[in-house]
Image 1 (cartoon, rainbow, N blue to C red):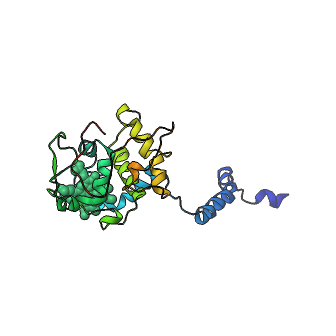
Image 2 (image 1 turned 90 degrees about the vertical axis):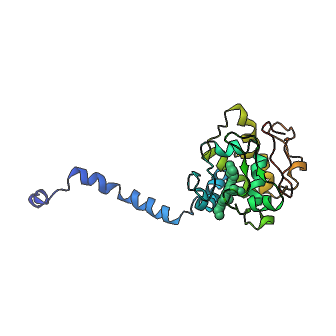
Image 3 (image 1 turned 60 degrees about the vertical axis):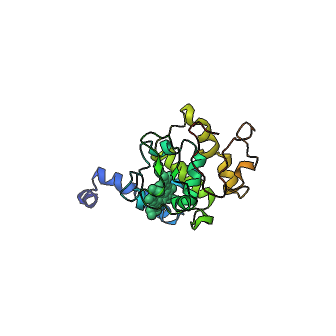
Length: 218
Ligand code: HEC
């Protein structure tokens, strides 16, 4: 009895901490053994893919002396239609220059049209333009630029349909590209339908750069 009384007691607060130790140990081991989270959906994959663009465009797309600003709505002014931006990122401005397209995107954009090559050459990202991104990856990174970096609002009427069809987690266009059922070259004719089963109207992306598409869409 006397011995037990004289043994130094573990303070109450330390007991509380010690009793949680098995839980901490369990969580630590689990964190080490669980596979890292794989990004999913156009916006998740796009954020991961943007790493290869950030070196020139800046981590937040703020631009640099070597590449255009993509943030603050800038990329939406250049490309009112997502198809036009997909084509540009696929081919890069070098191919636009070779094809004789002197202005890319919307020639009537606020702040003046963007002259091809005026800030240097943007390397083509698509597999047939010396790039290494799949068509699905290009769609994902373009969605990231429009909806995350440039803050397009999917609840805004101007973007709701585009978001649902191209960039949401249920995007039928992304699904078709990712599953290999379509490529940019045949996307326009691939008979892809929206959530209600209606055909998705789209501007052809095609196999070569073309001059900018109009601000009002197809
Ligand atoms: C080697 C540097 C470099 C890399 C890497 C790069 N870009 Fe660019 N990007 C440029 C340059 C330079 C321009 C301007 C092109 C011009 O003036 O013709 C540009 C322009 C753009 C534009 C047009 C913006 C506008 O409003 O005019 C988009 C969109 C774009 N890049 C997306 C991307 C994406 C997506 C990636 C990654 C997959 C990427 N870029 C990687 C250099 C780069």
